[in-house]
Length: 351
Image 1 (cartoon, rainbow, N blue to C red):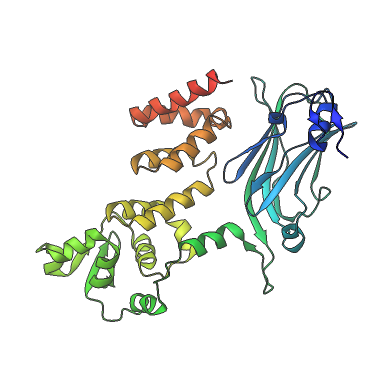
Image 2: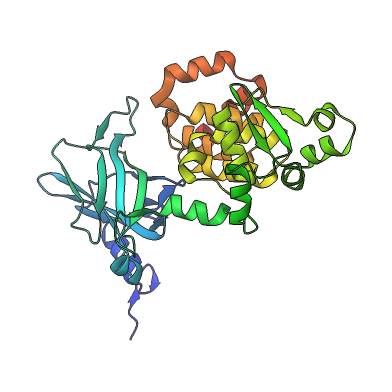
C-alpha cells in the first residue's frame, strides 16, 4: 500500500529521502558529464551527514558519487550494481579532485588512480581530513576504462575497442592492406615531406573525390603519376593511406589525429574527418583544450567546439589555464574569441 507524504503526494523512497535530508531539489544530486569528465556540485553539507548522487553514465556503466561526513569527509566513487557490473566490472584509471567553488578555487587532488577494479562502494574511498565549508565540486576525470579480456591476457580499453569497431570500414578487405604494405602493382607515387611511398589510383579515387578529380583531368598528377603531399610527414602519410586501405591501427591513429584531420579536410574524406572529430572529443583536458578549440573552429567541427567551450566555461577549467588562455587571446581568430566571451557572459548570467 502506497503511503502519502504531506508535501510530496505519493510516497517515493528517493524523493522522501531528499525531503528528510533538508528538502533539497533534484539538481543537488545531478552529476554533469562530458565524455570523460564528471562534476558534482554540492551547495552545502551542513544539513546532513550523507549524500549520494544520482546515477551518471560513463563508458558502459552507470556510476554514483557519495559523500559522508563523520570526523572526516569520505568521498566514494563506484559503479551502480547491475548484471554488467557483476559480469564485467570496470577497471578504471582516473583523477579525482575536490575543488572549492569560492573565489580562490582551492583544490584537493587524490593521487592518480590507475587500473583499479571497482565493483562496490567500498572499492574506492577517499578520506579527507581538511575541513570543507560552503560550496564545493567533486571533479572526476576518467583517463581510461577497461574490462577483463574474455580470452585472458591484458584488460581491454572500452574506448579504444569501441572506437575501432565503429570506425573499421566493412569494405576494407585484408587484400587491400596487402596491396599497400607489399606494394603490389602500385601505379602512383606519393611524395611526403620526408619520404615517398607507392599507392593505387583506383583505391585513392574511390575514397576521395579530390583524388578522383586529379586522375580524371589532364593534371600533372595524372600525367606524371606523382602526388605531392608536402604538408605531411611520411609517418602521417602512411597512417593516412592505412586508413584509406582499411589497414590502420588504433595507436597509430591516435598519434596522427591532427594530421589526419587536415588531410581528411583537404581531400574531402568525410568518414575520416568524422572519425577524427569523434576521437578528439574523447580526451579533452587542460593541456589540449585550447588547441582543440582552434582546430574545431578551423575545420568546422561543431561538436568539438561545443565540448571545448563547455569544458572551459561550465566546468570552470578556464581558471586553471589563465596564462595559456591569455596567450590564446593574443593569437586566436577574433570571431572565435568573441564566441568564447559570449559563452562566458551567458554562464555568468545564468549563475
